[in-house]
Image (tube, rainbow, N blue to C red):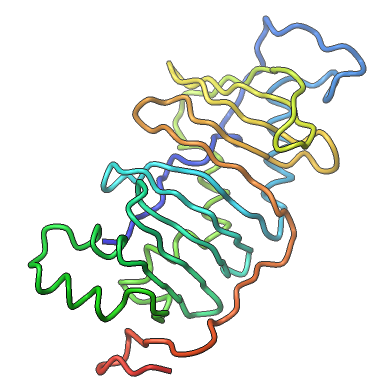
Length: 251
């Protein structure tokens, strides 16, 4: 079955936060001088949730299978998205969602991995039918909902706000650094025994640039780029197999 996004990724920037009392006072020329870790976190959340679009690249755990989902998706607030996703290197699927339609193109390795345990004849028939071909489904259909969930920017950013646990997440200041050549500031989010690392942009809006999980149970890291850039979500050209059609009519 299709993967579903982890409810715990990415980050917990919006969780109730506390500044570390032991954090050293920043010098005036440091990024976010005079702000606590919690205050920087709040600014990053406000900027990131205000974005019209972004590109998300990296890996997150899949709660259902326990595997790792590799994703590279550009998505916007309209729910449109375009990119690729795969499972632990077991092939890849191209995904486009535009309007009320989800388009998917699976490679052979992905189909075989998803069909593990099925009769060989069924797997071969599926590979023969779908491998390397664009397919379409209604975004509201049961088969498409899980994939379409990856295109929900509001839900993604809501998840970025944390799990909603009563226990506050302590946010402490780190140091100035760079992420993919962009000036950034490091924050450490401590939740129980887990310490996640968050990188916030120090030039322009304080967008979230990267999240690295400190959990051994749910490892993962995501980079965030392409803020407010157009998402190339256009219907694929050429033949498309309509999976909602009773006879699989191509369009």
